[in-house]
Length: 318
Image 1 (cartoon, helix red, strand yellow):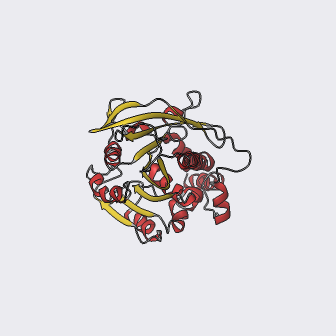
Image 2: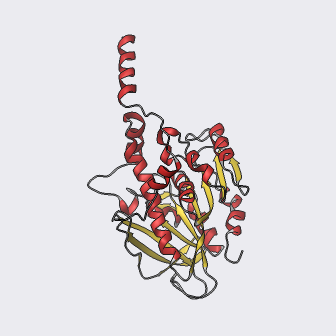
Image 3: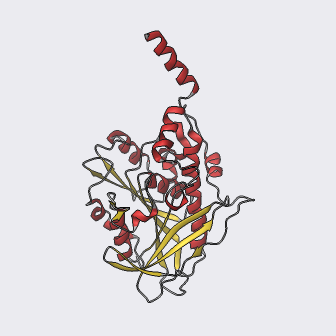
């Protein structure tokens, strides 16, 4: 029996186990390029503004949609503080509003950035509180659904986070997972092209905040696109060279000019203390900070208070 089990284990290792690989800077750059010849990005369309409340903040919300580099439909939401009497980001004249990109976790949706509960369940990541604070600080906040998430799910071929990760780790299906991450990052790059053309928005010094998978993607986005100058990365999962193209440790050396605040937990099931410390050491920037919390992957609600200086540093007029 032991011999048979060992043989089956060896066969699984040979056929399915992920093997580490290396990716050089030029290949990484090409992987995240979003504007190569033949791309099919379309204009961003905004729905008419609706008056909303995010926590205690009055704001204007626009549903948005656009065709990305590969023609895929992207959906999300743009929320503007209800000040200066102009809901649309196209408002001309100073001051140009600073932009915060809000990236959600795997299995979640952009709606978790706007409300305290979703489908009757609490938003335990407290990302809606972070969005409220960002709006209070004067930011325009934009969140997209990642590919295969929220309004971008394909009802004919729904893919759950559990299935995607199971297929990655059990059957070695690396390509679907890497494609989800890379293509969503490229969606945000297409969005940044539009932001840069809006007279009412500052597209040169964008900030990105992400939770879990969103933190992973925010770091990858900042490494790929110099328009992102600040990242708040809440509990990014540890990933190694088996998925090198989407691992934060791969791109960490490219973040020297980015203000990265890394938030980690001491009992996170997706990243050990040692792995989190290694990621922080790999970040070369002088403005980096590491905020450590007790507990697991769901950070205590007070983490938002600890991020207030990061938000304030990126506020309009500073």
